[in-house]
Every structure is written in C-alpha cells, then in structure tokens.
Length: 433
Image (cartoon, rainbow, N blue to C red; front, top):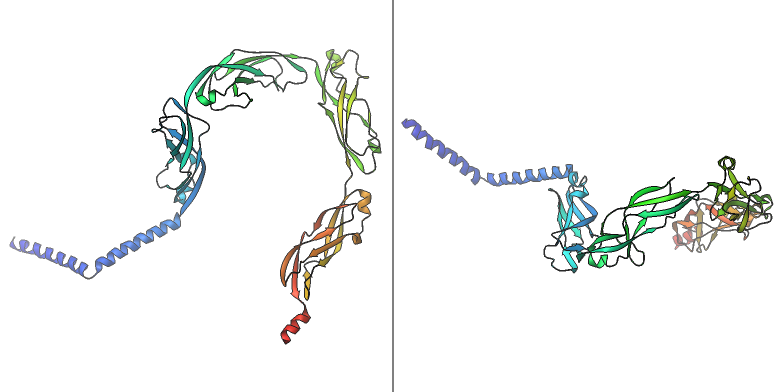
C-alpha cells in the first residue's frame, strides 16, 4: 500500500513535466498553427466543391403585415429585387417562394403616403447581400363600402351572322363594392360582358361584373358583392351563313408588269340566306357579278358590287344585295443575280498598295422583268472606299451603284477584308535613308 501511494504522485509529476516541456518547446504554437492550417484546408476544399455564388431574385412582391383592419393599400403591391449569397448547392435551386419580403405597418396610424422599410426573410445558409429598393412607397386609404353601383350589359359583338340577340336578362340591378375610399368613389357602373361566339342556342351563364369609371377605364382591386351575376341570353336563329366569292375577269390583261394578288369582300364575306331547308341545301356559296380589271395597274376598292342572285331559287332570300370588294394589284418583281463584277477602289492614300480578299462581287437586282434583264454587268459599279487608310488590315463595306430603273436587293460579300501596305518604292527609299 505504501508503494502505491508513492507511485501515484510520481506519475502525476511525470505527466505535468511532459505537459510543461510541450509548452516550453513551442509545441503549442505548432499545434495551433496546424489547427489553423487544417481549418483553412477544410474551408478551401469545401469552397472548391461548393463555391460561394450570388443570385438576383427580381420582382419579389412585398407583403404587408400588421395593417389596421380599417385601412387598405391603394393600387398594386410594390416589388423589390433581392440579391442573395451562399453555397452554390443552396442558391441555385432556391425557390422564389422561400424568400419573403415584407413591410411592417404596425406604426402606421393614418391614411396617406408612407415610406416603409422592407424586411427580408431567407432560409438558413442563405445570406442577404442587397435589397433594392430598401424602402417602398405605399398609399394607405380608409376602407369604405358603396351599395348603389348600377349594373348594365355590354352588347355582345361576337354574335354569329345568322343569330340575333332577342333579349338579355340578369338578376341583379346593383352591386355593392368595398375597398379604398378614393378608389370606390371613382366607380360609375358595373358592366357585364357577354360572350356569344360558339353558342348555338339560348343560354344562361354567370358573369363577373367589371367596374368602370366615368371614362370607361376598368378599376381593379375592389371587392364586389355579389362577385358573379346570372345572365340569361335568348338567341334567335335566322337562315344560314354562306360565303361570297368575287368573280374577277380581265386579270390576264392587267397593265404590263402587274399581278393580281388577292381579293377581299368587305365588310365581311358572309351573308345570310333564308328559305326552305331543301332549297338551302343546294346553295353552297354566292358570287358577285363580274368585275373587270383589264388594264388595271393599282389596287382599288370597288363599292356596291351586286351579288349575283340569278342562279339561286326564288324562294331563297339574301340579307344583302351588294358588297364592297377590295382588289389588290402589285407590280411584278423580278430578281436576277449578276456575278463576277469587278470591285474598284476609291480614296486610296498616296504611296499605298491595296489588296482585297476577293476581286469581284455578286449583286442581286430587283425590278420589272424587262428592266432587270436589260442590265449588264458593266452597268453596275461596285467599289470600296478605303478612306485614305494607313497600312494595316481592315474590313470595309462593299458599296454598289445600279441603274435607276432597278434596285439592288443584296450584294455578296457585304464587307470585304482589305490589306493596306506601303508601296515598294517608298519602303526602299526609307531603307536607304
């Protein structure tokens, strides 16, 4: 027992001596330095595998918090651009919804214009680098309600030609609106817009009213009660729709160098025909009386052209007797490419030599066939203005002059590589000097 009591303090003294030697010989400094280096190495490896990156999330809508119940924001909520930073593995897949911009309105106790700070919440490991703007302008107004907004119907404009709207009935004469006071005071009426296109019989539909001011501008951001109104539209069908085809004669005798491009029936190429069902089934389309365009050299609108009803049964009636016909005439355009046209040089500086990447160009002409075919390559001037360029390598625009009766559509090449060098005689004189 006596030996054990003596040995324990001796071992403790040995341990303390070893620790003292460790600190006295500078091992602590080396230990700390190694820890710093290890941490730096770990940080460098981490950065290489998952580097820091930034990303701009534009147009984040600012939400409003702690706004008094009797207050309302006028207009649309503002947006901010938020720049975030963090590891690439987190920033790249970051969802916009996970970044929240808000404005605390708890200290706003009166209506009017206010400048409010923007706060941003982001997920962990994501840092906010910038918020632009840092404050947003908000207009606060008192909530109000009006219950006397008259309801009307806007007559549909998409009714098929052989349909008529007999009546439109709706079950609400007025609606109530709630929202910012200054906004709802601008409301003049609520309008129901009815869509008829595609309907083949009378129908009932629910339509959301559209609020308008005195200038028929739509007003948004207002609660409407009721939010939808039931509308019943009664349609009457009359006859059937048939196409009108213009009959053109003399289109093979237009003025020389002109073509007939298209014909269009105005205001519409449809008419309503009515009569016995068995007779209507034999009428596939109607035509106009012939329109003679011989000698024409420009487009025209021929008014009050009669619809040819001479070949349809007498029991069938047509709702229109005449139509207008637009006839489009265009001058013939002929194209021709002329190749191997020599390229000239203008405004070369004295004592310089000009070398071109190519000595010739190709020009595509456009105009009447007669005028285009009459042009020879000698009638075309192709040149490059080197503008007294000093020795060096350049790209200059290739220019062209063509006869007045034609136009050039394109030139190939449009730009030319040009090398400007000092002439041989000048170099030899410089060397001798």
